[in-house]
Picture 1: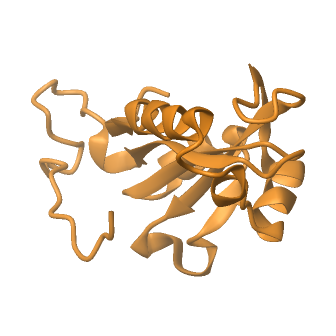
Picture 2: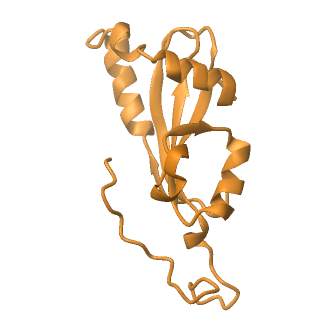
Length: 146
């Protein structure tokens, strides 16, 4: 997605956690704890992947995209399909997307990445880094828990 920015990748954290699980220092009951809401979101809004679950190795993982932002109002915190994200990005100025991988079989779940979407990141026709209305597109983040 061309407006995707401020990407945070959690693959190193995932690798470290899986190393702990496979060595026996962390039990599978601690990492296979997906809530019924997350499992349901994976079923109805998730994007199937070709990757096998790293814990049970029986089922493929599903990616669920959650959106958060002040402008989203009641829609904040909802799971959205990947196809809805470009429409939201052109509609709202700025919002966070959190991608969670879920195994619908054993309940493994882990945050894969987070990124920012929205109109504020688009470069205007002038090529100056400003949007068409002259704003720079730089916003201060307020009250975002990470």
